[in-house]
Image 1 (cartoon, rainbow, N blue to C red):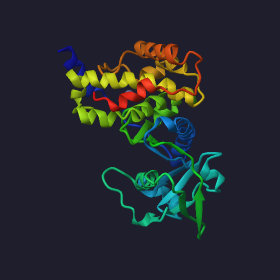
Image 2: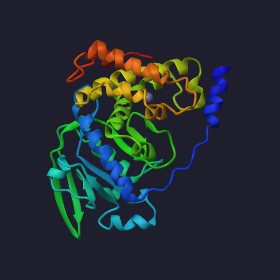
Image 3: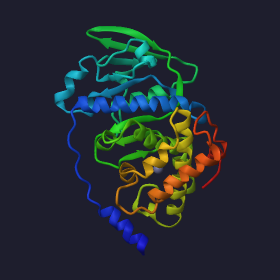
Image 4: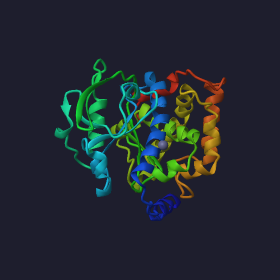
Length: 318
Ligand SMILES: [Zn+2]
């Protein structure tokens, strides 16, 4: 009964509408997130069964914005929002506002988003599904000129990492996209973003979405808080917290930042704020789980690490 009441309380929690951001503010957060995310995706590539070329270009598309932003897309409805310094896209000379009209033989004009996706997601998934041996060949449009650009993009874990502008949870992942809510991301330091990202990426690496679907576990509705759904969902959260310290260590962070984060006010917010949750362990428990994983497997608090004991869970049923 207590479980049910708490679940209803979660459902009734008031969601405050987000304030509007300018496309510049959004681009700045997207670039910051991409800088941190790309380094983590690359550093953990060998832990991931699905990889993609990590280009370092952040794409956006005209269908993401209102009319006031359409001037950004004079070159193409798909354009480079920004470029991560030192990335393959940067080294190839790509710049913000370059239009992308072709990706490895496919015309952008022939790509049609469906469902809730924007053109930018369609282009991204096209790009990430390129076979391992192929290069990323772009046709770029800049100030009326068209030219070909070939990116020497290294491979990293396969995931789109993006800032979410609409209302939604602070951080989420569905196995192919990791999203951080704009205001939440803007409130975090780079290290805190890395912790949140490592947790979400851990869900992807451990293929939780696939494993839950195979076991018939409810991940989305209010019933996720109840019975066997609750047990499995909590188990997945614990697995993700344990793996997150390894992902951070491989990316050059001191994994101890995980415990610090879960003890902080921002960690409280990331775990769902003051709303009761039966899926997540308490903040103190999460800090403890991370501390125990570090003590057992990362006593030197640095990578490289191969967490085989967690990776083997991918082939086990929930
Ligand atoms: Zn999680």
